[in-house]
Image (tube, rainbow, N blue to C red):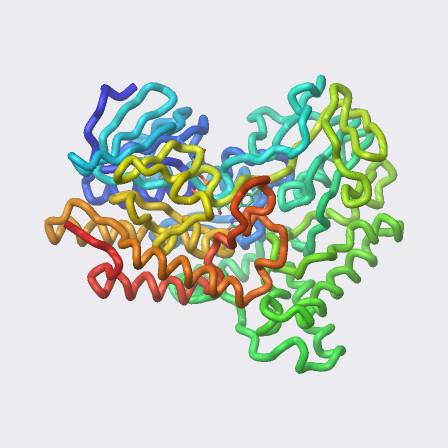
Length: 534
Ligand code: FAD
């Protein structure tokens, strides 16, 4: 354990992709840094989400660090879409390769961070009794790291074992011969369900909102693609940085409504067969802006559901309706729809019978009781703000972050907060974050923060703070751009709708990774416009 009030240059909270790269950059500067990580191992998302089927749905070659050309050349991915164990071993390799572990304190949750105006330093406390004083406090706490539980009572009364996908145990879970209930059909539910079905004697899936699920066509990585990408990695990375979602795709030039039905079908079919998260949503210019255009893609996906699911009543329940395609996190699957053709798998539509409670023996809905041996909770996360608000953060004048954000998260560039000097967020609300290939966004934020620290050192500054006017202008811009799209129309975690009582605000910036990066670069080139330094 650290001695009381150990003095550091920087504290980083979280040791996933964000915290590890931030640590590397700070170590390179020769700064004294400590990373506190609640988990028992580094890796963040890819440590916690060990459920069977956990996988990234950005291609391996794109979902990786670009900061060291040697690293990207030496690492070999085995599949088109990397599995959780493979990403975790990649991050473990990174931690060892750059000697990061020496500054990471595992199994330690930061509980409190407060800014002391007399010293202009952050005091950070943990649940293990650490108290450190740091000039910079960098939140690398993750957008999808605070698990969310079902809104109904009773989970604590269930007599069998239950597993939240985001808190999966280290040892393998065996569902053989069991009656299993899965609650939730978001990205994690869609990934875990086929694997639970492989083992369970009987599986019941409780679905509140059917998802638009594209086939991943995952498999061993195409070695020609590896060779081509490795030969041109710099260009590929740059294209990703300038793209909309952090993944380089050919940009559309037409509206979905200006082509014939046949042409559109062919385009969607090709997109479908590509097995790529953005192949359909970026097929036309207006799918995310115009409901009529969006409906053409939505209906195409519903057709695929009807073709895959043999029982028409089950297919009808699985068909995504009631919100535009792409406005909730889209998913890629491995045998998801086909799983519902198994006799042992049943679907409960919670729009027809509402969930009432979890009982000692199972789940009760308005239509009756379901008995289970084991439950899998796949209800996702309190996204983007959950982990940050899980820490008691107080800035100038003793103002807490929870008070500042009571009507939604106001930030400057999703990176900084007025009233909270020298505190930075990596992929905070108001940045592209969860709407992007997150590694691209993470690297951009880490490098931007790192450059700002260099700028301060070079200019003899010790305190930097976002100006309230800059924060307001940026937040207004984030909301205005969001309102031009269909995103606010869905009850998604993007707008906080999955958490009762959470302010309904579109949290990620939908203006695109490339445009956002340009804005951040302009702010930096203008001497960090919108920031006050002393
Ligand atoms: P995380 O990996 O979430 O790490 C944050 C860490 O901070 C966690 O380990 C947490 O324990 C720690 N922490 C939080 N609060 C505290 C505290 N108070 N004290 C100490 N430690 C704390 N992104 C994509 O781009 N493409 C994908 O296909 C994709 N798939 C995903 C699939 C799943 C199942 C999940 C959950 C997420 C997925 N993501 C995906 C998002 C993923 O979170 C990011 O890509 C990336 O891993 C985020 O890295 P991070 O370091 O910012 O956050």
